[in-house]
Length: 256
Image (cartoon, rainbow, N blue to C red; front, top):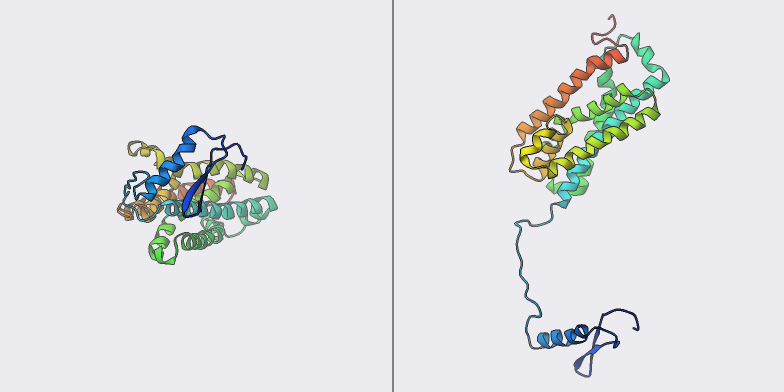
C-alpha cells in the first residue's frame, strides 16, 4: 500500500470481487481489472492464446550442457598430463630419464595413463549425473571418448613441451583454454558452409562426436569418430619427434 506502483489488488468480500486501488494509478490500470473480472465471471477468455509445438518433448539445454562438460573433461585430463611433465622438468627428473633405457613413446604412455583414466572416469560421471543412467548409451560413450583421447594427450604434451616451470604452464593453459572452449561455441553459430574453417582443430571433431551422439543422433557418428581418432593421434605422433628432441630423449630409446 501507498507505494508508487500500478498494481491493483483484488479480494472477495460479501459474495463479490472487489478491486482495491490506491487512487494514484493510471486510468487504464483503474479500468482494466474490472474489465478482466467481468469477462472471467461471464465465462469469456480474457485473452486469446495459441500454442506452437517445436517437436521437442523437453528443452535440449541439458544435452548441450553435457556436450560442453564432456569436452571440458579432456582439458582436465590434459592438465594432469602436462603438469606432470612440467614437474619432471622442473625437478630434474627428466635428466635422469635421458640416460635411462626409456624411449619417448614409453614415456608418453606412462605420463598419459593417469590423465586418460581421469578423462574416462569424469566423462562417465558427468554423463550419468547430467543425463541420467537410463539416457546414456555407455558402450557408445566409451567408444566416442576413446576416439577423442588424443585431444587430451595433445593438450598435455603441448603444455609439457612449451613450459619449463609451473608459472609458464599456467600461462600456457590460459592460452590453450581459448581455442578449447571457443571452437565448440563457434561450431554452434557458424553456418554449415563455413564450418570447414574449424576442421584443422582436433577438438572440433570431438565436439562433433558428442554433438551427434547426444543432440543429433540422426547424423552419422562412426565416420566422425574415425576422423577424430585419426586426426588427433596423427597430431600426437607428429609431436613425438619434437618432444623427444626437446627433452633430449630418442624416439628409438637408449641402448637396450
